[in-house]
Image (cartoon, rainbow, N blue to C red; front, side, top):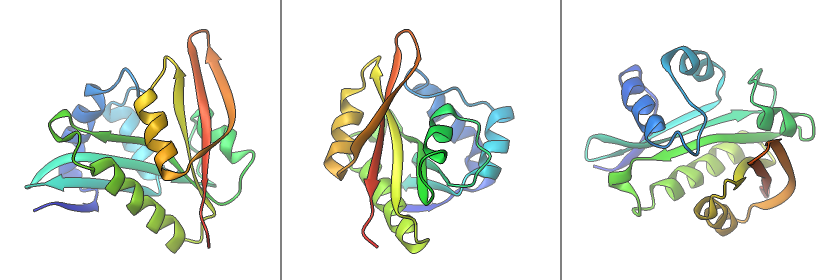
Length: 163
């Protein structure tokens, strides 16, 4: 049975393992980092396929104390948003529309909570063309770019939600 559901404590090891599989395009996440982030995040959804955790989405709404430089950039400029920090889908489950289902769920949640936009960053250096195309499909538009360091530059993107 396929479904989206809220995070449960039993998911912790799988979530951390999934993040580690894609750490080259995500920030590292260990138990010491995940526990406080889990407490700060507004939306932590699990995609389950046939009883297995297939992926997850982690989002923070405005007003969080999240220390991400990308989140802070949005927090200084927008007032009612959900920042998509990471969406991870296990390799066995790629191409099944799971990331899209997680994003549609985040959009629905944001509308229910009267938020005006979803925001996210996508790597330009090193490039993540798949993520750029994915966000373009949903209607995200670049609002700026941010250079973290030589070889690390991101596109800051926003999807305005009709209220």
